[in-house]
Amino acid sequence: MSRPDIDPELRAFFQCHLAARDGRRCFYCRRNFKKRPMRRKTLDHYVPHWIWPGWDVDNLVLACERCNLAKGAALPWPLVWLLLATFRPENWELTA
Image (cartoon, rainbow, N blue to C red; front, top):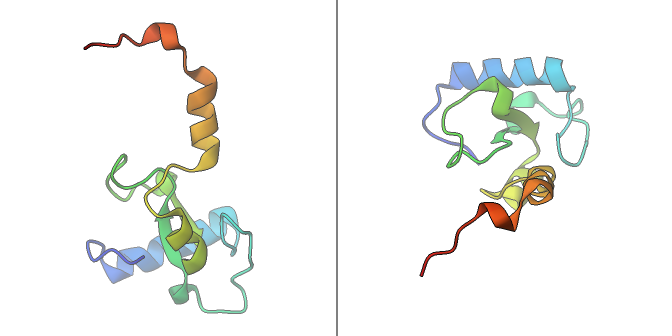
């Protein structure tokens, strides 16, 4: 999923930085990228772009196209579990 709002040089910088930080593999399926050029891999916003807009490296991961497309704009399951674990109904007031 390529976003047109990022400079190609900045995209390449992020890919190199993330490969050094996380290893040259898909963050989700852990498939190794060493056999294919990095340019064929995608940058994914771990927390969806619509929630955390911008290009903060703390919210970016390398993902294969398949995993990036499968995740789409959904929240990642570990984040959903964290939110559900801390949810308390008494903290929410329902209004009619």
